[in-house]
Image 1 (cartoon, protein in one colour):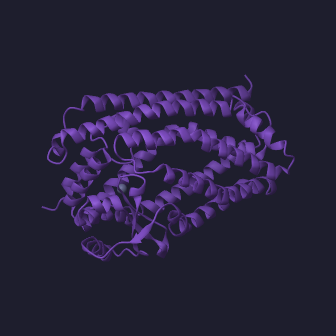
Image 2 (cartoon, rainbow, N blue to C red):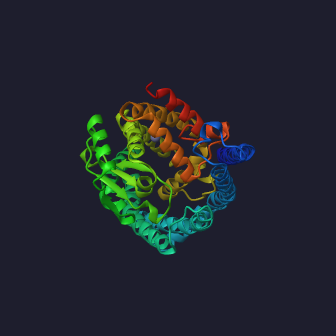
Image 3 (cartoon, protein in one colour):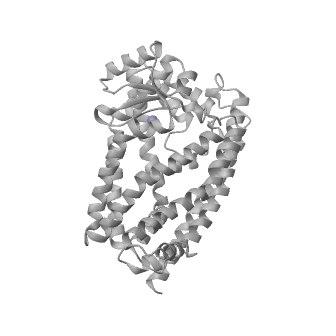
Length: 418
Ligand SMILES: [Zn+2]
C-alpha cells in the first residue's frame, strides 16, 4: 500500500470514528434528558418548576437534533473540499488570475473564506431565527444579523488577510525552519489581538457603558479591593440586543483588563449574586487558569506548526487528502481543515482540566463571596439559559467544560462556611 493510500484510509477512519462517537454521545444524552424530563432533581425543586425543567429538556433535545443535521452537512462539505477535489479546484481557479505565488495564495484563502461564510449561513440563520426564536432567546433582528455579517467580513479581510499573507510569505521565504518563525509571528499577533479586542474590536459589535453607581457597583468594588484585582473599569455590555442568555467575563491583560457584565446578568441577578459570579471569574484569574490556558495554546500551536513544517514537504499528506498539486497555501488550508479530525479524541482531556478549574474557581469564590449566592446565581442562570440539569454523565465527561449542575452545587454546599 502506498503512503498516500494509508493517509486516505487513516483520514476516513478518523473522520467516521469521530462521527460515530459524536452521534453515540448525542443519542445517550438525548435519552438521558428524555428519561429525566418529568421530574425536577430534588435539589432544585425549590427554584425550578417542572415547566422550566421541561423547557430546558426540550431546548437541549432540539439543539441535539439541529447539530446532528449540521454535523452531517459539515462532514459532507469537508469530504468535498478534500477527497472530492474542492481544494484542488480552488487552487486551479486562483491560479487562472496569473498573480505571483504569494498573491495567488492570499486570493485562494480569500475565496475559501468567502465560500465558508456562505456555507455556514444556513446554520447560523436557522439557529438564530428558528431554534433560539422558538425558545424565546433570540433578540437579534435581521438588521443586526446582516450588520454583524458585514462587519465580520470586513474585519476578517482587514485582520485575517494580512496574517495569511505574512504566514504564506514566511513559509515561502524563511527556509526549513519557517514554522518556528510562523509560530512566533502568530503568537505575537495573538497578543496584539487580545490587547486590541476590548478597545477596538468588541465595541464594533456591542455598546459598552460604565457600570452605574449603586448596590452592584459598591459590592463589586468591595470584592475587587478584597482580592487586590486591578482593572481598567467595570462595563456593562448590551448583550440583550442579540440574546437573552446571561454572562460575565473580563478581557485584555495587564492594566488593560476590563470587567464586562452582560446587561442580561445584571437584570436577572441580585447584587450579591452578581458579585459571587464575578468572584468565580476572578478565581479563574487568581488561580492562573487564564495564563495556563494561554501557555497551553502557545505550546500546542508550536507542536502544530512543527507538524505542519514536516507535512508541508511530505507529498502523501496532500495526495492522501485529495490535493494533487502541493503548494504552501494548500498545505496551510488542508492542515487547518483536517487537524481537528485527528485531535478530536483529545477533547475529554481538555474538558477534564477545565472542570477541575471550575471547582477551583468556585473554591476561590466561596472565600471572597458567599457560596450560597453563587448557588442561587447558578440555578437562576441554568433556568434563564434553559440549560439541562440532567445531562448524560458520559456525554458530560467527554465534552463539558463545566461540571454538571448537581455536582457543582453539592461541591459549593460543602464550601459554605458553617
Ligand atoms: Zn468558570
